[in-house]
Length: 259
Image (cartoon, rainbow, N blue to C red; front, side):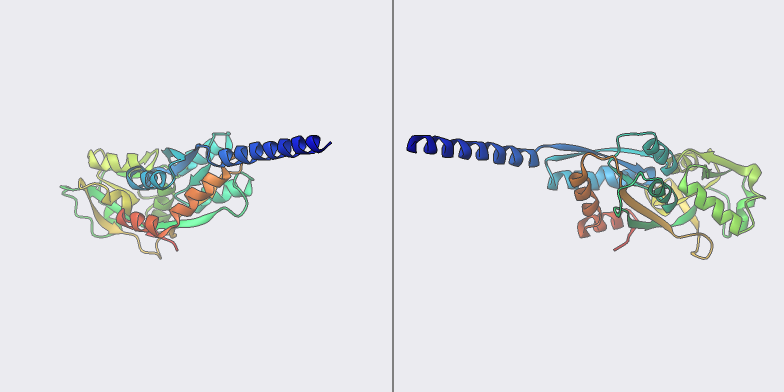
């Protein structure tokens, strides 16, 4: 009888060790998370933020996809395997949240940006006022139907009573990077982009900056997609983006972190 008790105790200890070991291993398992971010974040994410996060969290690998926030919004609605969404405007995030695609209470306002008018570095056009935009032949903006930068551009031009007058001059890009490239390549005489896009290259120059009374504040929210299977890792990445270290990096690239 005594021996049976000993055997039973040893068996229970073995089972406990097995399960504890299994739980410990599960917590240390490597995980991959996918970030869907506005294309205006590509440089800062790829060059600094993702490498820094993976250095601090060697068991988590980040895969990032970049496009206009509207296209990313649609991909999430269609079931794309995304864990974290960073939009260049609150509109896309709010719509996803209202439709039940974003994890409850996970949305945070992350960054601010500015809307500016750019021209090629050696442009001969003298643009000192927004009315001067009507003097050029081609104005590049993001497509307002899906690109937040384009939505801000439309709002700006509308508020200044220039939207209707500029219709024959507008070229609509699929994302902010395409607009920037058109101006760099001189396919467009000027473009309306984020200030961070303008500062990412020395091939263009800023000639005008929109005041807060001309256009809505440019806010980048971040949220965790409800269908994620990696909530813990996704939370870690979001918290990292809100850390002092990440704020320093964002500032280096011209963004204004929201604390």
